[in-house]
Image (cartoon, rainbow, N blue to C red; front, side, top):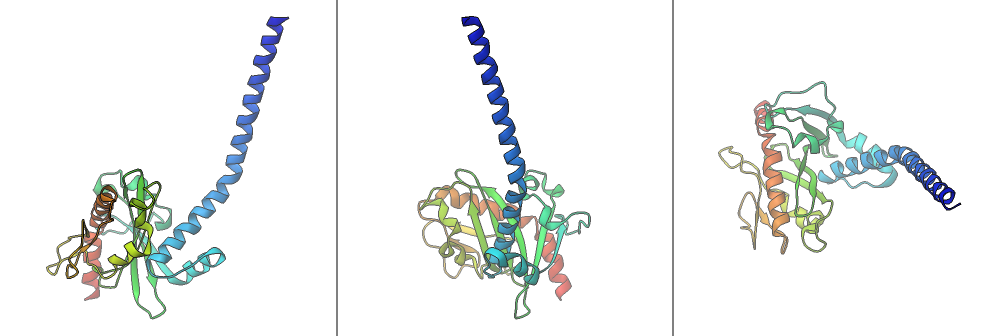
Length: 237
């Protein structure tokens, strides 16, 4: 009787495990389209935010269609990769590749006043996990017009401050090329940045490692676009 009881318990437990696994798998499959939809909306919202366009809820997609007029993918040589779609490029995968093999999305925005903005995504490592965002450039392709940064697990009140307006607004008007056209990126300065500097901003107080991660992210990702930016400048002359 005891042996029968043990077999019964084993069979019952096995069936329950299989049923629960099947239910969880079904739930994940049902939720996947919703999660993907939310991811796409958030991505469009952040791209718009980098050019100073606020959006939320149901108006994200029409606003994106209105202001983001062109998208494409280039490589580090500034060549267009016509077989790829900018919105579908997974930057997490791209930054793991050798630099010369990376696919680089570009999003073009046109503001209400007719000014053009060039938006590129950035991806890197913070203290506790990934950090990422978008950087938009003015028509000179040197001056930053806006940034959106976010994170997966930085410390609240410290590294997590990268997604605050106060931190992000520092980047507006800063330049990633010097007066001679050399790539310099953006430096996060511990303490107080020189207000006259073309490319310095204040690092996060108490968030040194996150600041260093963001600085490295900007250098690594924006360097990818150096040739593309320079080619676009030549076309504008």
